[in-house]
Image 1 (cartoon, one colour):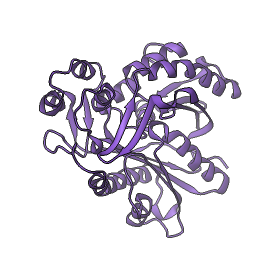
Image 2 (cartoon, rainbow, N blue to C red):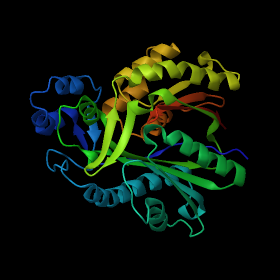
Image 3 (cartoon, rainbow, N blue to C red):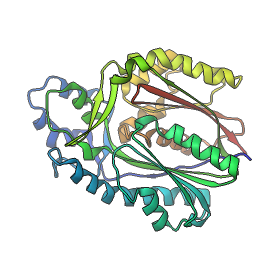
Amino acid sequence: MVATFGRIGLATPPSRSQKALWDGYFSGAYAGSRVAPHAWAASGVRTRHGVVDPTIEDVSSWSTGQRMKRYAAEALPLGKDAVAAALDAAHVRADDVGLFTVVSCTGYATPGLDILLARDLGMPASTQRLTIGHMGCYAAIPALATVNDAAAARGLVGVLLCVELVSLHLQPAAPDTEQILSHALFSDAAAAVVCRPGAGLRLVDVVASTDQAHVEKMTWDITDLGFRMGLSSQVPDVLAAQVGGVVGDLLARNSLDRCAVTGWAVHPGGPRILDVVGDRLGLAGSALDVSRETLRDHGNCSSPTVLMVIDEMLRRRTPEAGDTIVALAFGPGLTLYAALLRWEN
């Protein structure tokens, strides 16, 4: 049996301009910093979303416990909206769902979002559930592979939800370049996918690569003041050494070359990462436009972001049978995941 997915359910909290966030909070928090103004100007972000607006509510001194309570309160309605939109787009009822997988690295709750959302949306008590945590920005791809495989092998209707609330993890201001970069880039969002038989994108293959010599270049540590991002400026250079081989392997195993790829859905971790990927893969200048525009309009939303890029591609152009998309996402480890998607009628 072949499982596919189509339009993606998206939900975001209120949008705020990057300039308003800088003027209203971060310019004061980083007063005197030479790095911060440059990071904001070079972020590639124009607007982004947050369940917390630091110009109104400063959570930088909140305990991790306080942040987790807020996570549970905010993630539930956001996730519900995204899943409901995905079910509606797929013409699938909640009581048809056999597997529900929830991805998040920004919060914990027990009973988890998987249980609470399954209950609130009307999924059967027999629905199998899986929670994937703390994998970061690349998590959507291995999670999608898991849901897709279950749907294909066992005939289940599978639902994947990625929900991240990075705004809850605002850190106390400090002359720390890694924190400045993360504060300039990250955003909140939820994205949901329904895998079932029918026309849509088929996940054909997945490859992964973890550079074990550079695992410390991107981290996400649990502290008493929320989760703290470690984001080395060397990340693009490490990815540059990986991406060509990973994509080459993915395409070669499927008897394709780069010219045969219809679209490139690259997680926009930041402008320099997109520059590096485009350069190393020899892509045309416009090949990563959707990724750049997603970063511009939404920021880096961690795990939902690559799904947001794919969805925008589907909005702009109705695929034809055989069209292929290569999806790429990067995260802690330093880990790179790549997936080959093909449109099936």
